[in-house]
Image 1: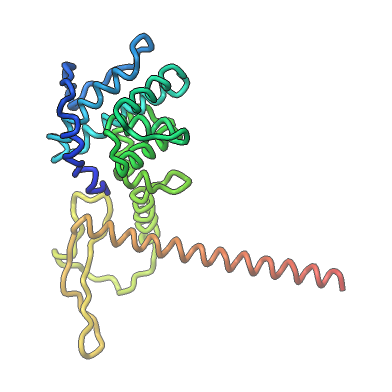
Image 2: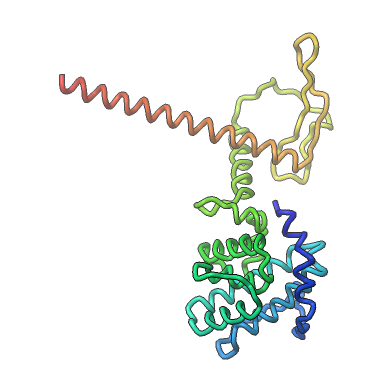
Amino acid sequence: MTNVSENTASAAASTANSTTTKATAAKSDKGIKMTKGNNARPLILDLNDLTVQRADWEKGAFKTSNDQLYVILGRCLDIYTQMKDDLPQRKNLNEELRAAKIKFTSATNLATKIVRYVFRNDRTRSFSYARTIMAAVDAKIDGMKLPKWIREGGGVEDIRRANKGGISPAQLARQHAEFAASELAKQKALVEAFKAPAELQPSGEAAHRFSLALVRKNSDGTSSIVYGSDNEALIVKMLTAAGKHFVAKKSQEAEIKKKLALKKTRQEIVSAAA
């Protein structure tokens, strides 16, 4: 799920850059020009152009879409890739950071320096954006592929919170839902099969065959289905919850089997030594 903070960038950052000269580069059909780095041209000039594009995004498109943000981050990723092995370019960036009074230390990594320069030292966002860039580097994603990769990962905040295996919360939830769908297809039914009314029919557009039923417990101890829904978002949440339950259950079963096997091995060793 894309974090709300991605869509509510600080207006103060735009104001701080109101004196920046507007870039004349034409926008692409996705909103922002994606240029290849050129070693003959100082990369700091590309970052200056990108800073202007970022200010444009903050004043306009961010209100309705994160697509332009992801393209900007893709360009930051490309510049990072070009700059990381180029000492003169890195030194030039440090000089420009000092001139712009953007704080950094010797321990500040290059990705953070780049996003602080482009986003003008918004520390909360710079951490998330730099973390996203470094995660993309680890995943061997380039700037052109980054927007799609971020969307599939659930957004910047989900990628920032991804575990050590690189799985974001959104991806993990999707895996749980898929696992639950597979498990539930062969699970014994809690209630005997019955012909479902229209209110309990799955959506014809869904890739699964599930719907949701709201069950009421009656005063006589029986239960009745009183409402049905084919809402995809609700069904996915329920499947995700079911998936977590099945994963935990299988993990517990595996742990029990492991302990029983260890106990059996110890008993065999004792018996052999007797």
